[in-house]
Structure formats: C-alpha cells, structure tokens
Image (cartoon, rainbow, N blue to C red; front, side):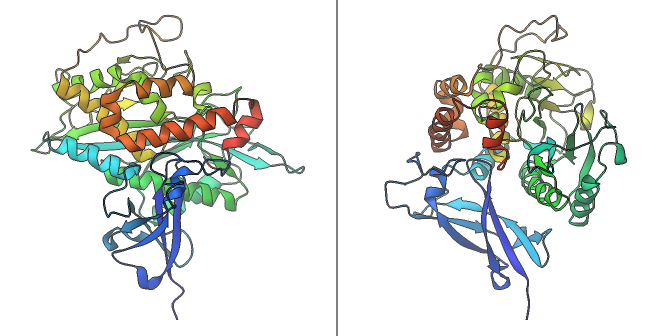
Length: 425
C-alpha cells in the first residue's frame, strides 16, 4: 500500500501557497477545486467582497489545474509537489491569477520575437523564539556581510536548505549572509521566465518549512527590523531573440530592447510599486539613500539606482530591477516588470539620462516611489495601460484587498506591524 501523495499548490493574491494534498492516484494531469472566495480573504482572515472573489455571489469554486509533466519530487516524505493554474467556473483562466498574468507577459514578448529570461534574488531575515516565547532575531553575533559557515548560521539551517533543495533539482546560484544580521540571500540560476518563477515560489516555501524544523522563522517581509536594512526580491532579466542570442547584450552599446525596457520601467515606476512592493511595511524599506529601488532612475553597475545594467556584456548581459520585495506574488511581480518593460519598448517611450549621482549625497532623479502604499495604489489606478497589461481583474482585486489592509494596520507600529505580516511572508 503506497503512502505517496501529491501536494497541489497555487500562489494567491497574498503570495500564500494555497493548495491540497491528493492521493497518489491523482499524480498526472488533473485538478482540484478551492473556493473562489479565497481571493476575498485578508491576512487577518476577514472575508471581504473583493473583485473576482464572488463573496456575495454564492462563493463558487475555482479549479487548480495541473499537468503531470510538472509534477516533481517534494521535500516532505512520500510527497510529490506540483504548481497549478487557476480556472474560473466558466472554464476560462481566472483573471486574478498571477501565474496566468506571467504567462500573458511571456506570450506578449514572444509575439515580438523575444523570450524572457529571469533570475531572482531573495533576501530574508531569520527569527527564533526565546525562552519567554517572544520572537527575536536569530542569534548570529559573529556574522558579517558575505560571511559563510557557522559564523553566519550557527544552527546550520541554511546548510539544510541547500542540501534539501539541491537534492530536489533546484539550481542554486549562490547563498550567503547579507549586509545586516541575521539576514540571508538566496539566488537561483537564471532560466526561462516561467520556470524561474515556479522555482522561486517553491524554493521559498521549502526554505521556510526547512528553517522551521530548526526552530527558525524565516521571513521575506521587506523591513522586519526597523533599525536594520530591508530585504528585496530583485528581478534580473534579459531576452533571447529568435536566433538564441541575448537581445540585451551588445558589445559596444545598449540594444533597442534594453533602452525601451528601461524607458518603460521609468515611465511606470510609481504605479509598479503597488504591485511589486505590496504591503504597508514595504514603504518602510523604500526610502531614499537605502539602495532599495526607491528612485526613478537607472544606470550602469550602480546599486543606488532602481534599474541597474549589469557589468557583464554579451550572453550574460542583463537588467536588474531592484524595487520589488518578498511580500509580492512573484508571478505578479515578474509580470509587472516584463509588462512595464514591454510598454516602453513597443511605445518607444523616451529614455531619460542615466543617473550620475552617488544616490547618497547627490542624486539626479527628481522623484521616487510614492511615500505610502495608499499613494502607490492611487498611482496604479491612474495608470490604465499598466493595469490592462498586467490584468484588470488582478489589479482591481489587489487594490480592494490592500485598501482594507491599510485601514487595519493604520494604528500598528514597530513590532505590532511586523507581527501582523510575519506569519505569512
């Protein structure tokens, strides 16, 4: 008698891995159903009538459909795992599904003759419970930026993540401690866009669950410790043309694709923030002089700008967008970056001059992201082309959920605001 089972997962509007366990007989092309009202659920488990949730229309089901070819080994005993797409009761793709939004963005670029390639950098802080049951930062007194080994991780939970992930076929590019302690960075290898985002979605879940086995609460929220730096989710991207060449990388100058993409990211900078930096806490990270993706600017190998051009040219050339954070649904985040870049390319937006300041004491950029999530949502609603490109229902659902979240967190500060988000992000 087999004990094997299938863990079916889908990424929701809050970047939570919703799903079910199914018996081994369901391994193969298939599906399972969840309530569409899930897309009206908030972090504090209120059920509100957000667009697309059908909370007031009988709470029908939506289906998570998956392919047998996508089933892979999981990190739990006797458990395989698969990521599915969401479909509405009429059989059409569910409009608030971030994975569908990413597939549309990929197809839109494909129709122009380009295939998006993606590399993602996740940053996270580690917490643990003290003897009084209080959640406190993981004790790493000898850690420093780019440290490795017991100095940065005395419990060895990152070693366990590395071992478990590589055994399952995740292609880890690097793992290290970040600038602040106890902060870590996890980077997976560059790949085709959908596979890269699928991998980071599963890797993030794996990392949090493996860390928990060691008594570590690993959080990807943007600013869990106000006195320390923030954590981002940087999107590195390029495009392969019809000949398999890197369309960003030319040995003597930036390509038209690169310049158009940068122009699009500059043009839609403020509206993008609502989707890629999607919680109140995000705007405690996105501040001037923080190397966080605050400014509407771009430049060469310069960590002070939001859109950075890699120092590598030719096949390894890429652009890096530094605004997003780990609270974002990664499918929505990458779809937003790709669609803003595409709009710049196809509409031939003018490219502003590159940043020449150091972004600490001197800065050419005249503006940055909105000061609050509320203002970012206003900017998104005013940017009809970006909303249409990413997905109208997805954006409408997002705005409704986030307005409610803003009201509920208005009186929360410091650890209270952190603790509102920390169990989920």
